[in-house]
Image 1 (tube, one colour):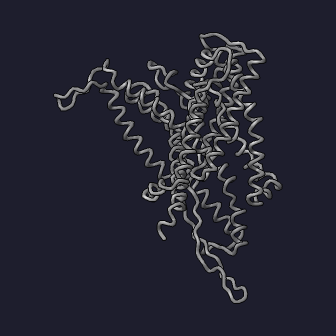
Image 2 (image 1 turned 135 degrees about the vertical axis):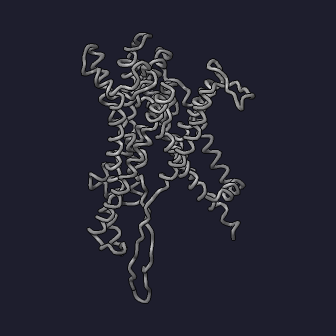
Length: 470
């Protein structure tokens, strides 16, 4: 990255206009995150939402990617998840339906049509998710809340669902406006802004605990007394060092790739010769990105939701209690210091890890089609040295991707497990979980999107400063 070129490009009026436009859109997005959904008793719903976020991994993940829209009960509560879901479904259909696959190969015109279908499919998904969120809050969370239950009229339901659907559609539009500026992917930047917006609250909470001197003060060199909690100071130092190590690890695995050298045969047409050159084909270590984590969280949320419904219908049901207990993420609020970690506390993390690994293999097979790449390479007269074109090349790609997935899926699984690993470490060292959700998935999204945005800004900067190097 040439940061000197990037800073130099800020002198260009068009570059400044694009950056200011993106910043203005992100500010508008953060304003939307604080506009509440028009409900009958907003405060009661907010209390219920906080219980949901603290007790379930799905609730915490949704709140993470919605930038606090869930805990704020804002109109962007649904967020971009309908659009992301529709995009993934379109990708899967593009591999399963031949006509969709042909349309995807039609170039820009075909992609525009698929994008239009994706936008249309996002609206009914947003409606369904809005209804599901309100239903879960009213029937499940509120039924277990000490604040009582909340009844909603049909008009309240329609108004709330319309507001949440409109908020999701508005976010989708803002994301496309950002993408049009050419300095980053709009959807990714909104998710990045959502995650970063949660950092100040977490940091403020840690500072509050740091300056709580009820546990004593920190003594340095026997004569310097600092008005800080010594235990919390040690924890923050350890977290700081751990964060640097994790960020370094995330950057490395995000940038890691296998470089395959491609050779193109020389062809003679008339008096001209073509080909006879070498090129490279990079294959990323984690080609699936964070999609396997999203799949795993969504998959694990189903048994827990079913268990909660069974428990609400029959509080004495052992099946409902087991499903809720086994498939709910262990949290600081449910930790019993007298008992410590129980066997069932490891069920959810273990299944979570296995699902992340499995979905990494599954989704990589969707986004990286070895057969299609081998066929296109053969049509273009390309080959890998020492590998015959056709089936042998396809097997070579499949074997290479599977080897990369073996390490990449394990790394992605460990990243997703960071909150549970840190809680386990704190339980073993200080006797209780810290309660700060160190989301490895969130950090991975931040690193991935930040690096990609820097690349796009660098490319735009090179374009606007090109004349300066003439």
